[in-house]
Length: 227
Image 1 (cartoon, rainbow, N blue to C red):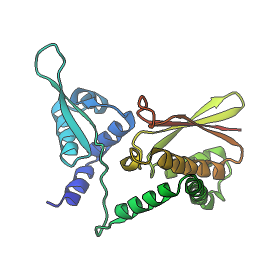
Image 2: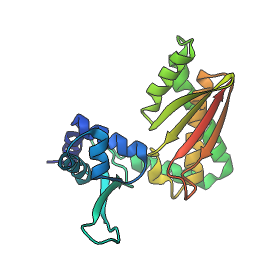
Image 3: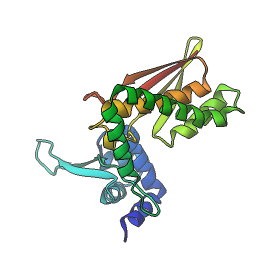
Image 4: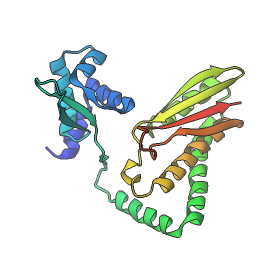
């Protein structure tokens, strides 16, 4: 069976897809027992789903020795290498590599121009759909819909007379290029996100709290105060 068919067949199972989303959002290693508990399923069923996700390289697994003897536990985590699907096969990733090399070679001026373009892209994506939204709840619904396509989940907290929106990116959509171009990738992505929020909320304070560029961070965390 072709890899593309194996992948789509694997994710077609609702429980398996939910488990993958769970691992994605947790951003850490999981065990069969943890998945079985979280989804109220038998450990053998949890193991089967995790194994199938590992078979198509969405997850990786390894044995973890406890140091206390006995059978080592198997842990599962997100695969480092992303998987790309296209019908028919396209070489857009190669084109992206060329463009990143080109922008990076031109230095600061090119990065600043790239930030302008990515900001406008984010703003346009939201603004054209926001003209009919008036309430905060409607705006958050639009943002949540957009967020799901690029891997973050907004959460809202009330803080005195303002609302604070926080969101984490657990599985960076551009992690394939993070090691080579961390500053470029993060600045363009952040500008895109800020454009989205500016299109919805005229008065806001957009702050990055944590970044995957730091070795101790497993995710990027943003906080936006809507004034």
